[in-house]
Image 1 (cartoon, rainbow, N blue to C red):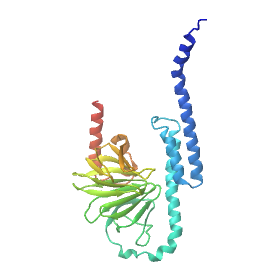
Image 2: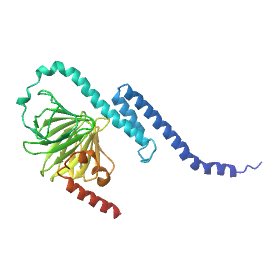
Image 3: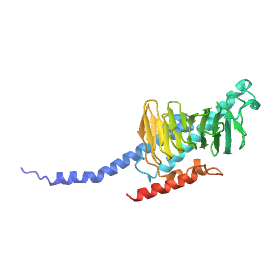
Length: 307
């Protein structure tokens, strides 16, 4: 008996047509599962676990920038980060009452760092008495821990040697360890060095990163979910020295430092992404490097059009 192979050919020829539909459906199910898990964990105030689930949802959409669920996941990530910072501050406030007697008077606080710009609620703690109402042109000392609440921002300049300027906004926390060392606990910041040859150490709870350049430079820094540091160059050729490796990045290039190694991140559109960031545009005055960044963004655009 002869068996026609035509039905088999037709069957296998239709597989490529139906596979994308099946894969899309499976992907959407996974996104919804992680989103629901993240939402429930956030409502239970288990914020780190909630962010882990929400970032897993984002991974399923990393190749689909116009996915219909992307905005709701991003919005929940943002609100969860904000709630986490507020909750940490509330817990600290409850426990700091007992410790307040051991803090030094503010009148003895040195002038290591100068506040250039500030808006919203920013709290400054440790070593000296807590400060909840700080103003522009005031000074704070080394060792201070700064908590930036949602809808707030602060710009600080190292005042002794004018070594660097940092900005941080919207649910972030960092410590001013010394005149050349910053510890970023959560959120993101911009870091600008106006002098050639500057070398600044940036720490997270898992990473130590030394940022340097032979020319003035600027970059964005962010703490990842695993405690690693994400660095994106804005200006200058920047050298990143990690615990066991070294990497150079140029404007628009990003690098992820985690598990004692560097992984290449995506190339950032300086015009569409960086110039519109609240780290640059959320303050009354633009950063000192803004005009150079505009020129760099134009150069990047012309270069991309030439290919």
